[in-house]
Amino acid sequence: MIDRFFPYKRAAEAPYQSFAWMAASLIAVLYAIPMTGLFLSSFGIPGSPGVSAYTDMLASSAVRNVIWITFKVSIVTTVISVVIGYIIALAIIHSKGGAKSFLLALVIIPFWLSALVRALAWLILLRNNGLVNETLLSLGLVSEPLKLARNQLGVLIAMVHFCVPFAVFPILGAINALDSRHLMAAKSLGATQFHAWKDVHFPLTLPSVISASFLVFVLCLGFFVTPAIIGGGRVVMVSEYVSLSVLVTLRWTAAAALSVAILLATICFMGLVGRLVGFRRLMEGD
Image 1 (cartoon, rainbow, N blue to C red):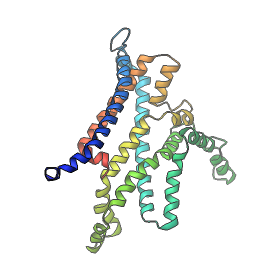
Image 2: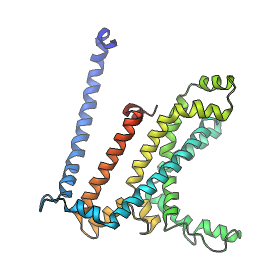
Image 3: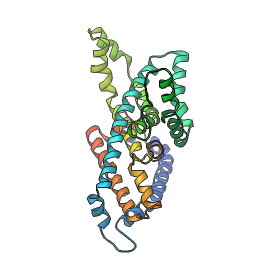
Image 4: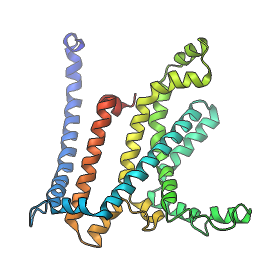
């Protein structure tokens, strides 16, 4: 209706929309070409076309175990990261002055470090003769080193550290956009701080929580460096398994099939979440 009465608005936006469509088309083409090659490779094309790679993948207990570990670690990491991210976002919102800047800096600084550096740092901290175990032993809190690395616990710790900042900012933006009068109205009607948060604050930020969860979960599915270094070959996730299939065992068709399967699972998951929440709210987080 507005565009009918203000045609100049559409004319002014037309050049920018054209640039946006050009960029989107370029990205789609550049993304579609390798993905098409990957999809064809999963069916043995070129070569001997067939679905043997998919049937072997379904029949392999090793592949099923890798997929199970990937989804289990990703789900646990997502839940912990979003909970911690929500708490940090609340702390930032309710902080003032220097404390707020300090908390924001703590969230932003990890972005300046590569995943490799962070993974190696966590390995130094968590290994048997690492800083954490040495400190616990020197204080007499434990009698022998705790197994914090080369297992799923160490991988979870390192992945949560990596993912928390990605959970903080969508939630922080949603909380910052809330109208404080809603909480004031709830409190004026006799609601406690907890009930005001539970009945008013959290439902209004729930779309951003779901968006943050989706973002973190998709990131976790593609983790390679952190599980490979912290897990030490004992916690093999999909990305590491695909890398081994390509570089070590030279099973390119199997690697392509597994990659396509994970991609389709991610798309289906995104479709399910978008169906429940709404794609617009999922993308915008409000």
